[in-house]
Length: 75
Image (cartoon, rainbow, N blue to C red; front, side):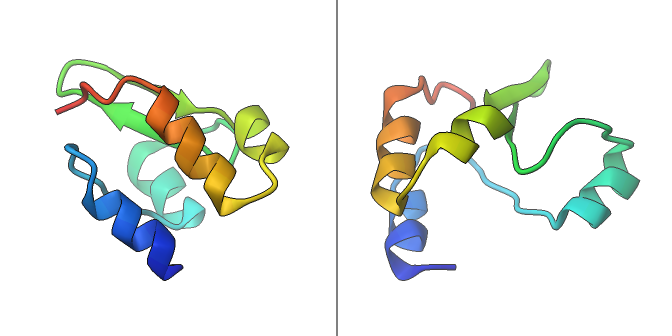
């Protein structure tokens, strides 16, 4: 994990868990596209950043900007 990304994630007010897609598919029987950023707020699981959104990004700075533009009320 790049240091800039790791440092950014440490500033977010949400718990984070990272999975390799093969492990995630087995554990959660997920059939959607990858890469994807999902959320779980203890009642609902959904897409936070879609594969299409991620595919359009060209830099880490764009990803950080995108995360900052989305509501992070997922605690």
